[in-house]
Image 1 (cartoon, rainbow, N blue to C red):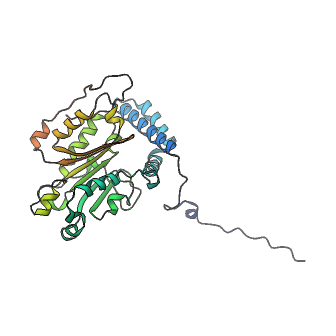
Image 2 (cartoon, rainbow, N blue to C red; image 1 turned 180 degrees about the horizontal axis):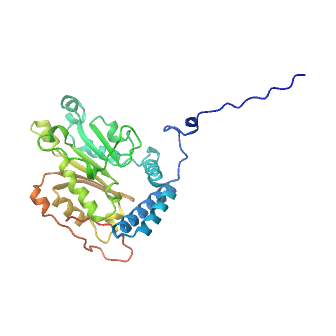
Image 3 (cartoon, helix red, strand yellow; image 1 turned 90 degrees about the vertical axis):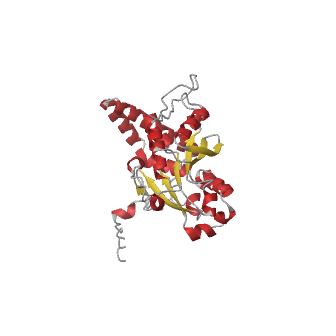
Length: 301
C-alpha cells in the first residue's frame, strides 16, 4: 500500500493575515466603551497639563499609559461603537430632526436644494461617513479629523485649517459647522475658547432670494455637542455662562436638548465684527461651588 502523501500547508501572504477595514471587530460593551473613552480623556488632560508645565518625566509616563491603553486608535474605535445605530449614538440624528422642523417645506423637499446646490457642512472630528447628516441629501459634507481612518475623511487639524477669504467665502464657506464631542477633547479652557472663536470664520452669510431668506432663520449655524456634566456639573461653566460666551461670539441659541449623557445645541451665527471679537473676554471664574464638581471650563481671552 502506497504511503499516504502528506498535504503541504498552503502559505498565505502576510497581508492576508491582517483584518480588513470591513472586518467586524469584537464589540465592546457600552460600559467598557464609556470607561475607555473616559480614561483616554483623563490621560489626555493630564498629559496636556504635564506638557504645559514642562514636566517631561510625567509626560513620558502618561504617553506610555496612553499607548498601553490602545492610544488614539482604540479611542476612535470606542467612539465609533458609541455612535453606532444599535446604541443610538449618532448625534447628527437630532441635528437632522431640528433642521427638518425648521426648514421651509420647499427646502425640506429637496427641490430648492437640487436647484441651488446642497448646503455646505464642515464636520470636525468626523469618524463615520454614513451618519444621518451624510444620508440626508441636504448637505454636501466636508469631513476632517486629526487622524483619519477613512478616505472620505481628510486628516486635518481644525485649528490649523485656513478659513476662506472674504472673496471666496460664498463658494468655500459653510452653512453649518459641527463640533460634536470635539470641544471637550481639547486639553484646556483657553484652547476650547480659541476653537469656538474660529468657527465664525468658516460660516457664510448673505442670502437674498425668498427661499434663502427663510433658510437664514436656521443658517449659518454651529451644531455643538458636549458631555452633559461639562455644563450641568462644572465648577466654572453653567447654562447661563455658556449662553453668555456664545452670545459674545455672535451666536443666538436656536435649539437645546439635555439628555442623561449629552447636551446638544444649535447656535445660529449672526456675525460679529473682528474688533468686537478681539475685546471679548471670559476668564476662569467659579459659578457653581461644591466639592463634587468637575473643572471643565471655556476661556476667551
